[in-house]
Amino acid sequence: MTNATTTALLADKVAFVTGAGRGIGAAAARLFAREGARVLLAARTEAQLKAVTEEIRAAGGTADHVRCDLSDPESVRAAVDRAVELYGRLDVAFNNGATIQRPGPMDELPESDFDHVLAVNLKGPWLAMNAEIAAIRATAGTGAIVNNSSVGSLMANPWLPVYGAAKRAVNSLTASAAATYGPEGIRVNAIAPGTTLTEMIDEWETSSPGIVDQLTARTPLGRAAAPEEIAQAAAWLLSDRASYVTGTVLRVDGGMQA
Image (cartoon, rainbow, N blue to C red; front, top):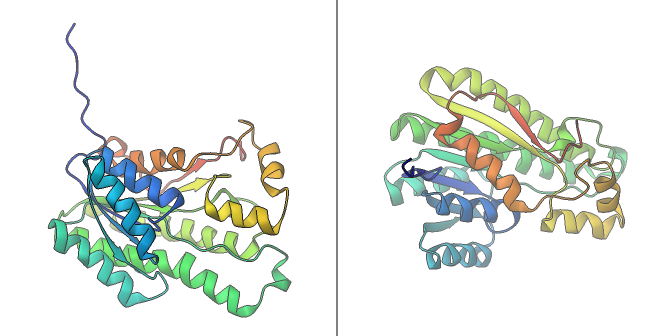
């Protein structure tokens, strides 16, 4: 028997990650770099981006960062263009960035909050996908995109109704993009995480004490996910090992929707 060398999951890929300063996005940036990608991290907070970028570099990875506001079309386009400027092309993108809504019934959410959630969580991925597809077409030619949705998009979501609605719309955009750009060799998928131990869930727990225990009780695996567990699913979907997978919403939810 001979020892087989396993190629890194994202070897020689250029990857763009939004919401990369913390949580799932930061975990994804670290993982993608370990798996061989050159990574551009994008988010609003410079200090967080810088810290994660330096961590990746210290571990031997290739990374840089750019400030990006997902509610600002020019900012989104400039961030994607920066990946091409730095690394010469774009192969894959993980549209992870999002904002949480104030938990509670939909009739209690101010209209301004509704507008903000949709601007970031729906329009943001739409803007990002448009820019990413253009960059992939112009450089690598083929590639893959993963949008971060939520298990809350797949069921009634009385706690976070507008957040869930925006994420359900992202699922629809994902399917439409997969059908539209598949003939060009651009795959588009989404992941639907369950309860994940991020700053966002911490904010929800602070405003709704006990919510994490409630969600965990509904999860057959009996625990919340670590951010890297969600990142692993995104990395596989972006890799060539998922070459015949497109248009899917992959649940990464510990069985909550089983």
